[in-house]
Image (tube, rainbow, N blue to C red; front, side, top):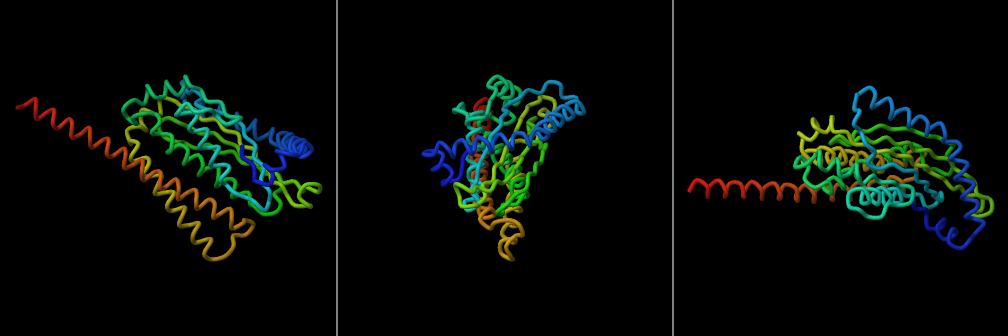
Length: 284
């Protein structure tokens, strides 16, 4: 996963710093062992309770991200989510830590068929929803100078038979040698997105345009809420920069959704016009 600029610079030129980050990664990985087990338990319980025995993994992975306290940003998270989404639906190279299942993606495309059009139409939709869930989790931890170890697991329906299981863990470390006693915060993201035909059959009736519009409404409400919080006072325990980054990324997602809705409606309208012309020619 991405790192803050100063961390990236040190990684590029300092062997000792790379070793230091490796020890931090191992430390958080050990702390997050329980979160990993809990995530797997959540997956097993969900599919057992719902009797979705046909579920297949679309993509799963594990990514670590380091952020210097002075350079907190959610841009790194959005870039990796976009990269994972592109790898799953467009065949791009996946970021380190992500494992797409091409066979499962093809099976989902065949099962969903004309209900959503090409599977690539889901790319922006799913990336936006995943970013929303994970970024809210990160912001809930706080982005101040120090974060005690904390973790949170999340189960979220993405619609169309897709279910996301995610766990975010975070811990901060005071760097005596590299940042003059300032803090580095490490985030560990675990995720597993699966597809099941059984819920998809019911959910696709809603249609992709309606799904985009529904989620976009939620994003716009969230964007307004962020604006109100920024306009009154500095949120306790959170850097204003974190909220501004969240707001910027949400606006980008909303703009993408507007564009995609227009494309989907135009495509649907073109099909309607063609069908009308065909019927007219057939009856003449």
